[in-house]
Length: 450
Image 1 (cartoon, rainbow, N blue to C red):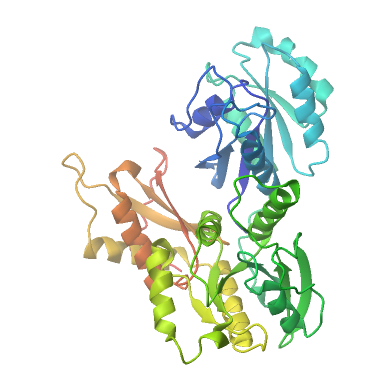
Image 2 (cartoon, one colour; image 1 turned 90 degrees about the horizontal axis):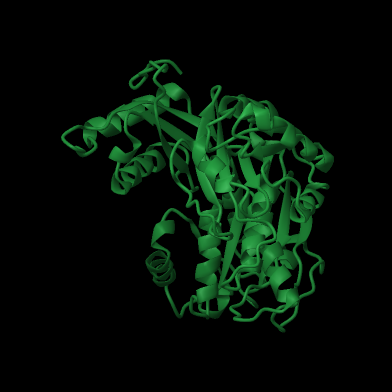
């Protein structure tokens, strides 16, 4: 189970970014009276009552963006709601209920997730009664808060933690679980043919006309007694002005990536890597999904080009994804397909693996001894202890005295150590550095317990 996500939603100018900064304890999001400042999702890791969760700030629902990005902003909000474990429906006590608040409440009506109605700008208890009208919206527990006056922060965080899903402390091996594999790539790279060969049936419509698959389709199958789900997705293409069919096809394809356990990113062996390929790979990386680069139709180049040329080509193009394995297959005949699926199963297991705290702390201590972090303002930043807080992706938190003291280069060094020495060699990882709380006196580096 990944780190739970708590998403802040609401109409423009209710103080969503102010609440985000207030709960995070840092000024991370831009706060402005002008509507529409927040477009992309902002994210920050928070610890409360020994539970970790990612707090997500989103753009205002219903904003008419001046730069014509309304559709993109709405898509970011939809993704955040889709992935949320808890939703903070934020409203403004001073303004009261507006028609747009009612529209937001209507949008959340069929969302089957815990919702907390957060009445912001209730700066003083004497204004509490003004927030009572938000009970009419009927969306979750109502709490009166004020980011400006710093009111009821602990109460809000307590409510959030109460509604988080139960942590998976003892994760069982995923041997019996269905592994969901998203098969993605630009148009006409052979995705549907791959699925047909996989299940030995014409389940997918296969055509030489690009864009035949307009929606994501799940296909269940078994291999060596293990269940899998293959998600065939629409082909992606570069388009300045997408039709509604293309837009929603892209949206569903991205949603398939988000709900997949492993992604097979398809390339045509006879075609150069395109801008669409690069955009897809960036989306896969941004979602921290285990991935295999699949060079399809290799029979067309067999004997004409060594595989290492394509390997170098992929490594040079996607330098931040150097850990991603590469497979060469022929979807038409099924050549190398079983090895590809077995490798996908291996990535699935890596993403679900957990490392004991003792082993992780000893590894961090060894990494620091070998290469200490550089001095910052004449002081060397210190890591007190490390812990893995989640899986899919494996998420490691380092509690330290000064998160800003660790440069991006040093964080990459630590990730490289984890990738080399732990069982996460081919899957994405998340690494967070958190300032240790004043009442936390743990200093477990070098601990021997497992």
